[in-house]
Image: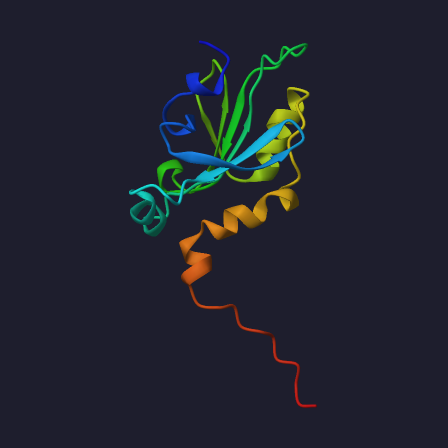
Length: 140
């Protein structure tokens, strides 16, 4: 398997999944659904607009594999999905598990605080759901 983003399979191929670059964090790209796409609205309301963290391997002087992380969505059964090029995708319960798995491979991944806002913006339940209740502070 070629070690490029274009060679990624299924949901992890940013071109086929119509994702666009929204930010770079270190050697990682943060990709989100292209809101200009005709299919965006149906994917959004179907809870199927995952954020993708992508690190393209095989860069000059580096031998690391291409790695793709998808945030939970309908297509991943509500789990994080990790793809290390050349291997089958793995579904993990949380980002901490993703970081542990990549840590065991000696690969650092971005802190969630650096990209979580983009995931929230793609969450129909968060953006259009009921606002969280403020705790009562009692009478002044």
